Length: 169
Image (cartoon, rainbow, N blue to C red; front, top):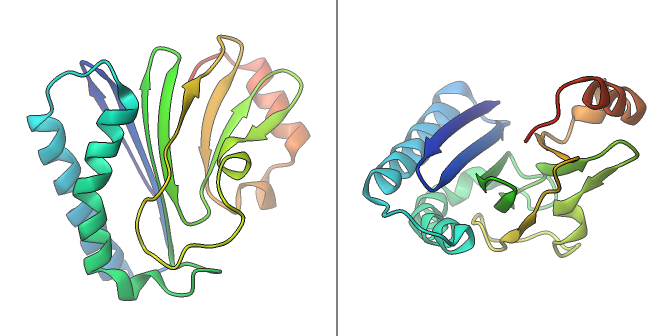
């Protein structure tokens, strides 16, 4: 698993990746993606529209993913999962590839916004295809999670942890 946070003047970029690849291959893919992200952020002019900013970044990253297409594997069980999310205050724009989840958690329940807002059929293309955007309420927490999170932590335990910690995104 790889996670990186890039604070920017126009918002914060979160990157989460889970790889089921050998370490050398995963390292090369991670390096290629993070280098492209850092180059994009270095040249990015401040924007008021997170969705457009994320869309432009995904246009830069998708050719890299297509160059590594053979690594993706079976669309029903991809060998890597990626999530990119831009946050600015309560505004959110995110995109996922594979089976990573973006969970919005409040005192009462957990909502997987990636599951609620994406098609139920797997993609055959190893690239980002959808962007989810909106606002997170002040009493909610955003959590990016790998597919195996609930193998280790129950929904009730996760709610308990979030509700006893300081709120935040």
